[in-house]
Image (cartoon, rainbow, N blue to C red; front, side, top):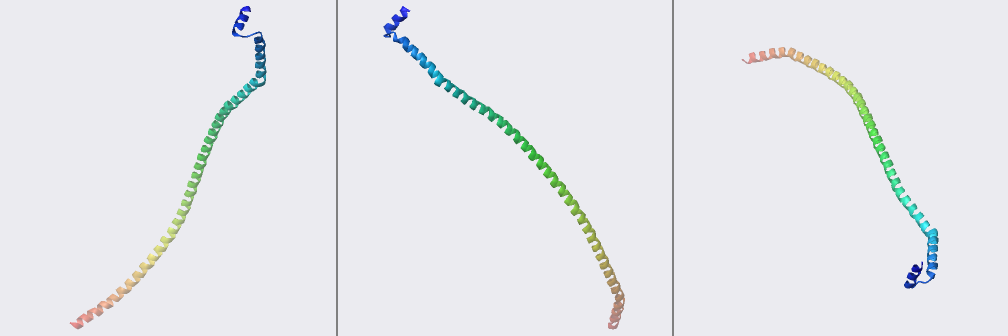
Length: 149
């Protein structure tokens, strides 16, 4: 201990060094109790919040990705359903209109056939009339030719 005191005296320190050391130790514990522990808690809280927020953010991203996949699947299902409905309605309309078309076509064909028969009968009637008149015309022509000769 004497050696320690001799070293302190050579450095220019006196017995008040022990009191100063005691004051420094007391100040350390007081600042630790008042400031350092509180600062440590704040730092830990901040770290927990930032790290936990990062973890929560990743959870949210996974949840968002899952919801997005479900949304895409539902949209695709809805598109397929709508497309099938449109195709079935389109096929139904085509069948209905084709039936109407066939019905009208039959009516038109019957009308055309009836008009064709009328036209043929009219032509035949006129032909018979012309042929009947043709004999008289031929006889009249022969008489005219023979008179002139």
